[in-house]
Image 1 (cartoon, rainbow, N blue to C red):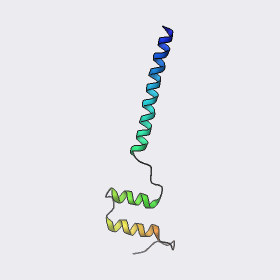
Image 2: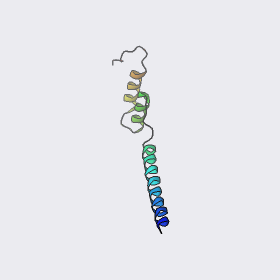
Image 3: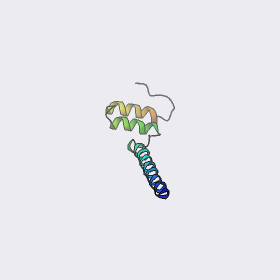
Image 4: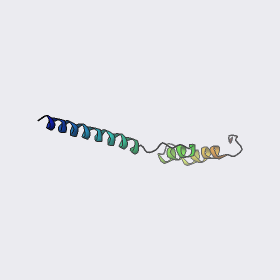
Length: 73
């Protein structure tokens, strides 16, 4: 009887830990990996329609300007 209780509790704890682990993985995977590069963040904002094409291209040009100076318009 004691052996059965240990097995039952072990099974329940194992199921709980598996569900918890899958939930954490799913939450990290659903949001996707956070973009690390500024260009990727900008592209993600453009994809979500937070920026129009003109804003996207202007900001992308500022990010990719090789002189180190912001592009003034």
